[in-house]
Amino acid sequence: MTTRSSSFSPRKLQYPIDDHDWISKLPDELLQMILSKLTTEEAVRTSLLSSRWVDVWKWRSHLVLDLNKIIETTRDEHMHRVSLQLARSMTKTLENHRGHLESCNIHHYVSQCNDRTLESWIDTATRLKHTKDLTLTTYIPRCIRRYNYKGTSLLDLLPADTFSHHSLNSLSLGGYTLIGPQVFSNCKNLKTLKLINRFISDASVLTEVLAACSSLEMIVLNVEFLTRHGVLKIENNNLKFLQVTFPYKLDRFEVDATSLDVLDVKFIKDMRDNFILTSPNIRVNGHSWDPHSIHNPHLLYNVSSYLAQEEKNIWHELMLTGFDDKKRYGSLSVSVDINDPKEVEILKEVLLMWATNKMENLEILLKNKKAPREEGECSTNNKAHTNVLEDAKPFPNAAFRVSNVRLYNFDGSNEEEFAFASRLVIQKTVVKKMMIETSLFPTAEKLKVEAAVAKLMKLPKGYKRLRIECF
Image (cartoon, rainbow, N blue to C red; front, side, top):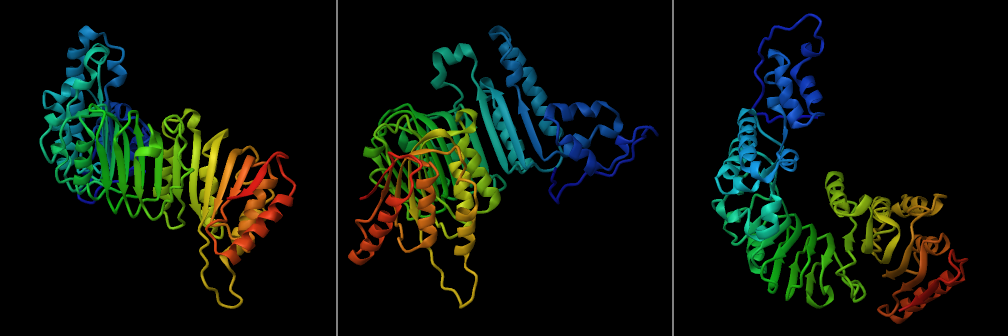
């Protein structure tokens, strides 16, 4: 539903309306709801219907200004002229809009970086429209892309503090080149930063950019460095979600983030040797990184029942971005409290992101959070037990398969954890091997866990060749 800033509201104007035009007689709020289902281009066209419709589109809370559809079909020799015409149209649309914007998505031609048009659009979107979520994507024509792709669309042409307006909290940039960090000066306002398909001069520049954006809670990096060596450091105690794609090797990649709950490594070369993570919520084990991790994405997820639904939905959508048919492959390391039904449900959602037979390794760290209960009080354990155990349907579903599973912090005396592990064995979830950590337990506890593992070994296996071992 379209939202509006309280500082702005459409003027209540009287328009002559035909007696048979029932739609035009609807109040502005309903008309805006109807227009919210249309593209920006379609919504603007409704201003031609009658005087009643002239201003309705101008109160949209979301604008998408995209010249790609036309540019893609334009011959190279006509590109500059057509892009100028489209840019003027986009400028007019942005200037005619009234009120504030929740989001603004601008896809533009490379020349708009050089003639200050992009700078003007950003200024209007942030300082006049108070846009909260800004997406900028540059189109680079075939002729330039072929010969000089890395030297085009320089963000450094923009003035310092370009993205520092207090209203802007989410910024996504696609296709640009960044030589220095100045354009990101004083960007403490940003909560989300996505750098997609970008060239950056070297890792130290990106380190400075991320340090200037000290309030970031979500970072998505899909970048290539023009200098293939260097050290990238991310130090941010507000950071909760980090997704990285680096096609070439770095000398070192360091992440220090005390609040990090999700680390989504989609593509990094030689991960095991040059990655240092300091984050209490995420445990990176020696077996976490496949030696061929350049080809195998790895997701590390600390499941939390305190995660807001909207935030979780955004994270989960990003986790599937770039995968065919919106299904992941690769491996997963997850920390979860099996006794918490909300966390169990989130775990189910995450597992179902994987395509059938495409999860190679699954590591599960069982949190074992045990809150004291009053006598006779109903525990969340029973609820989780019902969700996981007593539901006749396989968990997460009948088609899910994983080659290898490692369980950490497995409590042999915990009924819910044993029931969960039993399901993995019986219902054909684990295909090759289930490994259960016992070596770090004190002697007495180790014996209990090993006894529970012995019981698991006696269960009827979904796959007869499934091996169950301690390590």
